[in-house]
Length: 201
Image (cartoon, rainbow, N blue to C red; front, side):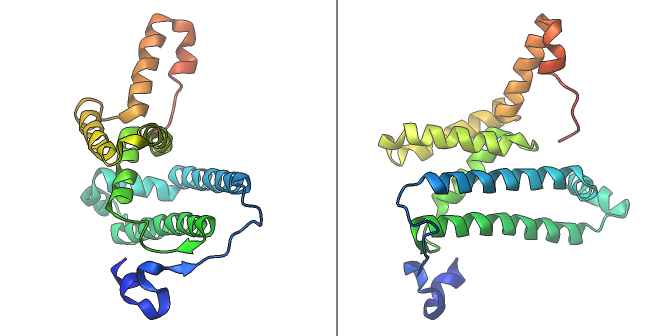
């Protein structure tokens, strides 16, 4: 962000660059469907990556980097790969937002916005595939409901993160799975639906 801000001759700093709108209509409906398609594509790509051989390397590095290196996993190589893939996702999202608002600028990516991404992941459920998606939907809906509260929302989100981290480390996904197990114990007929066999996240 600092580099983009300093290079005013190229990026115009915090003023940003004008970006053409993707659709002629001022209605947000086309952007909604485009965003939905991009989100689904990103989720499917991430799911395929997680289930692949590379995904097993990523989980091994996450769980114990030293042990993964001993087993022959090139940890430096695959960490660079993950960084590059995550940068691609971020670039696509940033480019879409720029064309939606008509401006490409580093200003939107301030501390609050970056913190919200972390909040979404933690609340949704760390080390789970649906966690960040569920967390993003939940936090966005809650954020809109509390819009009148202004910056107080960030204090509430911080408290929510502390509660989740200390009491429910699995986040919303973990809570949902716990509820499913309890219901399955009380209603055995629902066990195959509520507690399906799944691969390790």
